[in-house]
Length: 148
Image (cartoon, rainbow, N blue to C red):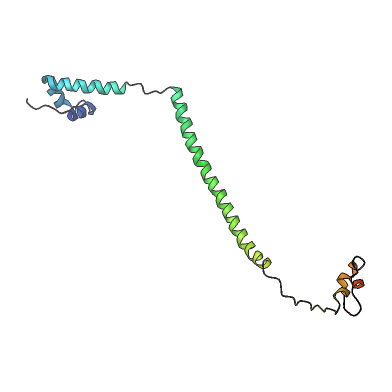
């Protein structure tokens, strides 16, 4: 028989039921090249199955710590976002309430008509200067006729 089986065919034979793989096994009994490839494939598969995949406790502790840090960061991010949104909302509401009040307070005061000051002929006889009269007696230096 000149036909040789590929590794895919041999792999399929390895995983099939013993009764279904009879034609390939008969070929392997007579073909040394296919038998050696089948044995290499079988050794590889059994070696992988026997591989010790248990990790030490330190590895799992590191993995657990890494996962918990990532989960912890995600847990606090939405909480911070909620507080920030509440603060912005409070500022907006406070601003809309306070803005009209501020505009009312900063309005110019109503215009009051100024009092008309009446001046007497002699400015020193005004009531605002009466308290300074004893300190400065200007009238004593001036003649009655208005000449100095």
